[in-house]
Image 1 (cartoon, rainbow, N blue to C red):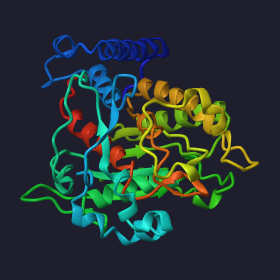
Image 2 (tube, helix red, strand yellow; image 1 turned 90 degrees about the vertical axis):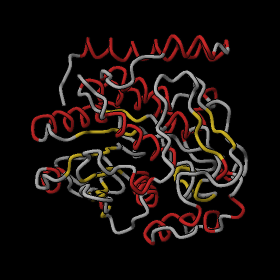
Image 3 (cartoon, rainbow, N blue to C red; image 1 turned 45 degrees about the horizontal axis):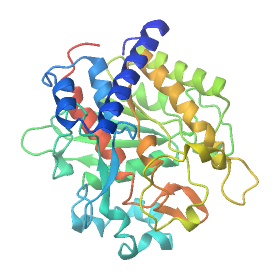
Length: 365
């Protein structure tokens, strides 16, 4: 990882924002041919700016991305795998009544994410995700975050069709492990704090610095709110420490979508066409709950994380924009943050796998 100045970083983020705004204009004018001509460039070798822009565009709602009804189950997992989840995910995220029977959820499972036609680099067509990360020089993969990251972890393992955490690659390609460390605050020091302090598994000295086979890490700050000054200082310290101690690691940061306050009555509705930006204040708390979750503040903190990630050339995975359109498929009427597996989190895995594939084309930072 290479740290860049705040000034150059702000210019970098602004450039991506301008590109996305331009795509939005093309999208609203429906200038498909013009858009492809203007945004088409050599996809064999790309700069970091174009790499991050391609990822941001793919998950962008304002650029024209939407949840497309496919008819039948989505293609991320083979159909037979939909019925036999890994035991760990089945026990944790498949047990609620709303999730356990796929039959009533087939309509929701018929949607998959469709990126804008104007995004410059198409996502690779992957029919079998079980070998999708083989030969990509990922090394062992470590996922660090809260319970939403556990859902991502379980979805990735199911997509890779391997529940024992070791993925055997075909031929002479080396296999790799997928590891998970739950730490709700990405706390390096190991200090225990917050409501879920028992979930702050030590991960830095004990795992990252000890296990040199780990070459890929996906961080997520999670849904456990802290004031922005604490949020940003913690990420700064984490990324700067990694830059000094493990510059050989490819680092990804996945942002956090807010929950949906009224998911109890929206479990069977189709995906939204656009975010409820005018109603984000209702995300402050689950319906009927007196304890605020600060969901409305996730948008700002996601932007802060994006700026810090850009400064350290950490790949930023924006899953919040698309996931915010999915008030359906939540675990239960009492849990409007987590999702059933399989479900909308399939899109998170798609974005990560594509980011790994696209990263091979990077020629500069």
